[in-house]
Amino acid sequence: MANKLHFETLQLHVGQEQADPVTDSRAVPIYQTTSYVFHNSQHAADRFGLADAGNIYGGSYNLLAHTLSQYGVETSFVNAHDLAEVENAIRPNTKAIYLETLGNPNADIPDLDAISAIAKKHGLPVIVDNTFGTPYLFRPLEHGANIVVHSATKFIGGHGTTLGGIIVDGGNFDWKASGKYANIAAPNPSYHGISFADAVGPAAYVTYIRAILLRDQGASISPFNAFLLLQGTETLSLRLDRHVENTKKIVEFLKNHPKVEKVNHPSLADHPDHALYEKYFPNGGASIFTFEIKGGKEAAWKFIDNLKIFSLLANVADVKSLVIHPASTTHSQLNDEELKDQGISQSTIRLSIGTEHYEDIIADLENGFAAV
Image (tube, rainbow, N blue to C red; front, side, top):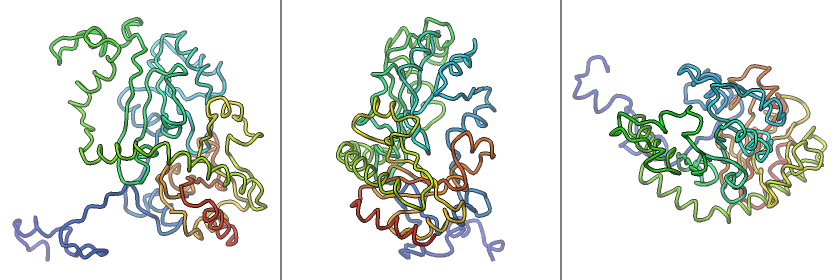
C-alpha cells in the first residue's frame, strides 16, 4: 500500500505504522537510555554478528586499528607492561602515546609513571583514557599524563541514561618544542591566523578542539545530556564507594567458587598487576572485570541467561549490575589472535558490579552457576 500513497501521507506514516508497543504512544517516543537489554546470549551474539538488525559497538581497538587508518593515522599496538617495547615502538612520526588506566575488559593496569617518563624523554604527549579509573579514584595528571579523556556515559553519568565524553587538557605539554604539532603551534588560517600555542598557552590543545574540531566536525553535547552528566558528577564519590565495596565482596565470592576457573581482578595477590593496583588505586577500583567459567562458551551462555538482577547489555559502569560475553559481542570483531592478545576466551564473562545490595548480587550469581 505504501507505494500508492502520496508524499504528504508517506512523510507522516512511513516507519510509524504502529504505535509504540510499550506505551501505545502515537508520537515517536524518546527513551533516555544508553543501552538496551538483549533477550539472551544468542540475541546478543546475533546483533554483534550482524545476523540481527541493530547498532553495534566497535570499541577503541577497531577505531585505532581500522577506522583511523583510513584517514592516514597509523597505530602501533604494544604490550604496555613491556617498557622496552613501548619505547622501541616510538618512531620519528609518532605523535602521542595513548593508554587506559584500567583496561577493558580485564582491568589490566599500566605503569603510568614509567610510560610518562618515556614519553617525556621523546617529547610526546601522553593521552590517558581514565573512564574506568574515574576522577575520584585516580588522577592521571599527577602521574605524568598530559591529556585525560573520559567516556562520561559510564561512571560520571552513572545511570545508563546519557551519551557524552570529556577531554581534560592538563596544560602541561609544550606543543611548539618538537615542530610536530603545526595545527596547534603554527598560525591557523581558518581562525584569523592565530597560533593557539601562542594565544592561549597552556590551554592550546583544548582551545584548538573547541575552535576548530568542534566547529567543523560536530560532537556538540545536548544541553539536557550535559545537565544529566553534571547531576551524575554530584554523586560520583558516593556511588564509587559502593561500587568498590560491592566489587571486593563479589571478587572474593568468585575466587572461591568451584565453577570458576580464574578471576581477572588486580586486587588479587596472584594478579600480575597487583603491585600497580596497590600503587595507583589505594582506595580500590576495577568494578568492571572478568572471570573464566569452567565449561567454555556453552557454560558461559547458560550462566548469563539465568541471571535476573544482572542486565545483559553492552554498557558498563552503571548503578545496575551488568553482564556480557565479550567474545561473541563487544569484542566479536576481533580475530582469534587479537582475542588472545586481549586476554579473552570463550569462557570469559565480563561483569560490571552495580550498587545493589551485595547479598542480592551474590544470590543472583549463584542462580547463574546453578544452571551450569
